[in-house]
Amino acid sequence: MKRNDNLFNYFKDLPKFKFKKIKMDNIDNIEELKEGYTKKEAKETKKEKPKKGEHYPETHYETIKEVYLHSMKEFADDVFILDKNNPKDENFIEYTYRKFGDDVEALGTALTKKYNVQGERIVIIGENQYDWYVSYIATLIGAGLAVPVDKELPENEIENVVNRARATVVIYSSHLKEKMKAIMDKLPTVKYFVQMKNDDKLEGRTVGIKTMISEGRKMIEQGDDSFLQIKINPDEFKALFFTSGTTANSKGVMVSNRQLANNINAVSAYVIIDESDRLFSVLPLHHTYESSIGFLLPLSTGSSIAVCQGLRYISDNLKETHPTVIISVPLLLESLYKNIMKNIRKSKKELIVSSMMQVTNVLKGVGIDVKKKVFKEIYEGIGGKLKYVVSAAAPIDKKVGKWYSDLGIYFLQGYGLTETSPIAAVTPEYDTRVGSAGKTIINGKIKVDNPDENGEGELLISTNTLMIGYYEDDEATDEVIEYDEEGRRWFHSGDIGYVDKDDFIYITGRIKNVIVTQNGKNIFPEELELLLSQVEEIEECMVYGKEVEGEKELIVTCRAIPNYDKIKELYGEKSEKEIYDIIWSKIKDVNKKVTSYKAIKGLEIKDGEFIKTTTKKIKRFVEIKEGRIKELN
Image 1 (tube, rainbow, N blue to C red):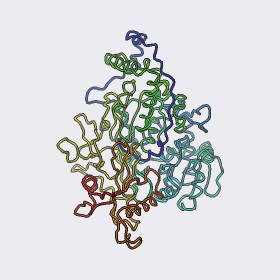
Image 2 (cartoon, one colour; image 1 turned 90 degrees about the horizontal axis):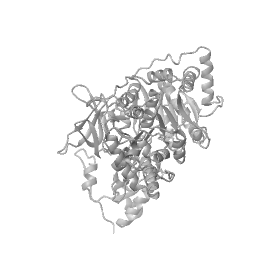
Image 3 (spheres, rainbow, N blue to C red; image 1 turned 180 degrees about the horizontal axis):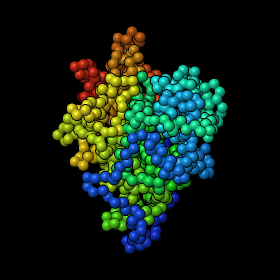
């Protein structure tokens, strides 16, 4: 996935990963590599490749309730969630599918029958934890409409989201207790505030989730099976994801059960994950990427999920839980790569590792895969059992992807947006192509609009994962979704790229206004421009992501036309440099009103008028390339 939301803050302070010294002193020759590679091992590691143009048999789920019921029946005694009450606890607690299902049904019964909020909006906000998973599924399969919210939002933005969603219930992390207390009186639609990992009895509007689950369990024991009898309309609006912060300009994406289920169906055609697999949950669950592919997918396959206890615990948690799948963003995957390579160089084993990658690639080409034996020490540093690494939400260096592949790990990439909930393309494990953003999902189409001489243009997406539309914003929906003559819906992605003859996607640029950080965090210029419009010293402005040589990250920059008359009135005659300083001081004031990653870090004073369309809209990308700015000496 190239673009998605709300991941930057989560990964801004990655720790240094520590790995043992690499020895690799037991590999002498090719024959030794082959030794012990039995027919049984070959059979276990080799998957039958689909014929050209075909794919694995896909699942056909229509609702998440269907997924849930299937897994509760098939995998009841298997471990589903591994979590800790405290990150420093020695061992992970293992929750089986049966335990998870009992808690989901108890919570759902309490919400719908005792607290009478069936079908209403339920905000879920907090760090990844067992209670988050329980709350989300209970909501999706009958309790109401799920609204996952970023726990990193400041109080005023949480307030805005809850009020915009007209939420009746807020289920929140214990770590957010004080933040929620501060805004409760500003949330008139909320009937109940439910605290995770808490057993407080109902007092006013607050109650502990354990109390709710206990109450629901008693009702079920007395014969109440009403929650599981709730019918789910596959196409009903069932989840609301906000694409960025929560000002009036941010968009809410409406998603149905069918669209969420179609993510599972799409991935099943390209990647085989089963009950032997364990996913490592390190991305925030409010994000469609993690909640769909990192949660709903393993729920459907009988796999387990190990909850990372925080960035500082990544290295330890990997070794404690031995995951087979890591779904993440480039920053984390690149950091792992760099730290491992640093350790290899420190151990003076760079040459032998490089050589063994070449040798094992040759052997794998003739059906002998000994990579896990050769690179056992490296594997042990990341849990020992890693099979899949999935990179999404931002571009990744091809060199890094190839390195994971050479190590013997399936390196997969995906492409999509919150609007595609989120999968639009993903790499098939049987046809990996480092550099591509993935292959168009089954039952979907991606095409290039008005391709240039190189075949590049805006990517239009038509998939069965495409959102219902933007929440309470038909105009915005109509701007991005068009219908063809056959009535098929096409979404304007805002991304420039091309599609090869095999339906693999390659992203080469962006035409949308959104500024995307290296870690998939979205910054919407319109949001900042709205705030800047209130600065009377600025006549007109445009916010964009400026490319600066030597910097990987785009620099959020304001290109402004000063209101010279107002400045003269307020400050008297001023030089161009003094005017620059005045406007910059006002921008600093604006920065205090937004979360840190959105802060404007550069200012340009526009020379003349902005380049505009006939309807007086700024031609952003023409302006960026051709517009003139004043040079201040």
